[in-house]
Length: 196
Image (cartoon, rainbow, N blue to C red; front, side, top):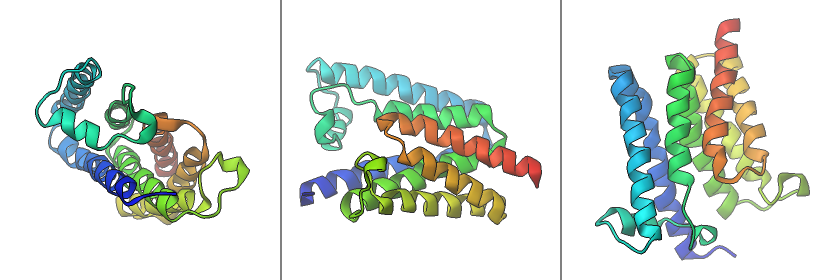
């Protein structure tokens, strides 16, 4: 059973997660500096999390990290912020601006919708989804497709990104979905754009 405390933690966590949606706008201003910012953020988080794991506390960072940890992450190094930064970075480096934006928006909005809807409203959990709910993966599809449509202004490209995200979200890959989902979404977007 999900508690109010778990809902609060997940809402805080996904609020931070959604902030990655600012990356395409920053990259449009300066791609190199945005990539460096993401690399620096990943490196800084690795250092801060290592210190937290060793018992040292950094003002603001360590309490925030502790506040958004899921139960399964307590007592171990939390990988999600690292994979989030790497997923956005890979999207910027692998794809042209439009597919990269669609990939990062799928990461920001599709993955967040899946986690929140699936965890707190999901009721239908077939065995082939390894504990995930149909409502969660469906919301990943909807949010990813809608955000891709706003990027490409084409329903075919939007549906390709949405279905790709649905498939990736259904896989039992844990925190590595933050890397695999945007890369898969970016490839789907790129292939769709080439065919337009």
